[in-house]
Length: 315
Image (tube, rainbow, N blue to C red; front, side, top):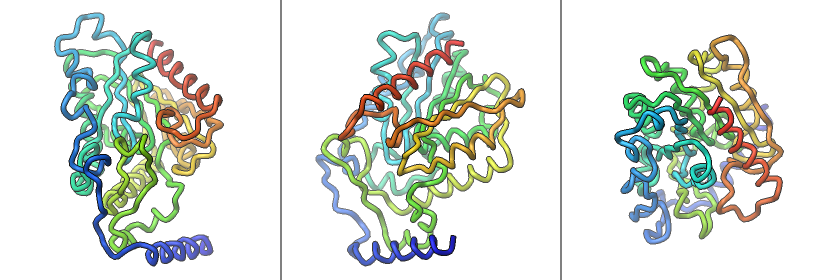
């Protein structure tokens, strides 16, 4: 353990020597999500992304149709769940709400100022609207950081007083980061100012290229809080089921996070939740668009997950 910590500190020092003293990144406003142009259409066309806006006066049949609230990950946008909508809505009996996390999809400054509570708020807000409208089969799916945001809602009893969620799906939960440098971000963050992640022409409109150290600290506070809540134990509401899907070779999120969820979550009848390990090296294997390489196995894993979402919500 001590050797690993010293190694991490050494890597941080090397990184600090490599970066410039400038604490603010140079942003291309025309091509990057970090800039002033709004690329995420959910901000100016919520009717195309949120069921509560798209169907203001639902029929009895619509109220009985499964609704899946989809929450994306840290630095991402609603794009992360476009493929599921495109696959499901034409032929499947399901409605999909693609939630944009608070602080995301806007400019760098807005992201920098946001907290993990800000990120979480739109998930619960959409749930509350759907419940108030009378939808009877509301479900949740989260990818990466969307997972601890959803888990924290259960830990804080946020659904008390509402109709309990039916199914909850967690994709590659970000509880233990693959990059161990994040564990000391509170120490090195103020010196770094920000970090840069690799994006390409296919993804720079959908993910932040620059990650303010303030948001990395928020990410770690969130994951640490949820890990402690899992140690204490989280009981799901009556009638709520959960399944975790975790890529085996995921460089972004350590697989130990799936074990923590399995050990820390119980359904109301005392049974354990389902966990499926996916033979993939992709973080968020359910999103394939924009990837430089996608294998037939990746496509099969995505389709299998999408199909199971539908079948479980219909039970």
